[in-house]
Length: 136
View 1 (cartoon, rainbow, N blue to C red):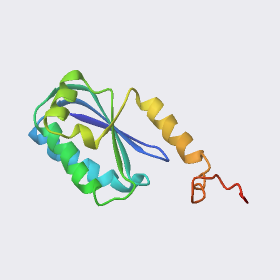
View 2: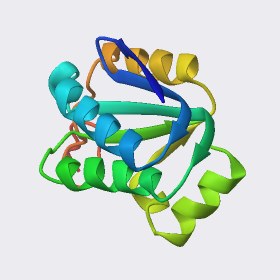
View 3: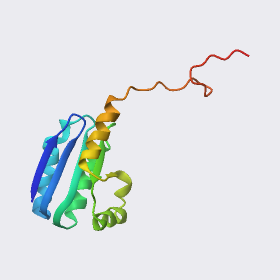
């Protein structure tokens, strides 16, 4: 298995290729630990579309990251280009409700950059008005 990692300002992208088995799971989990603090949150983007084989180890990798993510208030796990088989596995293990799905790495990175650059909008005033004074 090969793991290509790209560090962006808003996320860390990990693209795995080859075969993800027990030995690969140990390597992949150690790699995630190494890059954990590379992005705020952290925001981890997994591109697993080029895996030619994976067993339950893929669930182990994602579940371990999700457990650790629960302690991080702004953390996110994004899976791009998941195969139908991977989607099925994520559904069956209830991991699908804990990840975000996207169509491409490029779109995901662009979306995260735009979100980070957008000015934060203050919440509306109590009572549902948008800061407009009302005097009856």
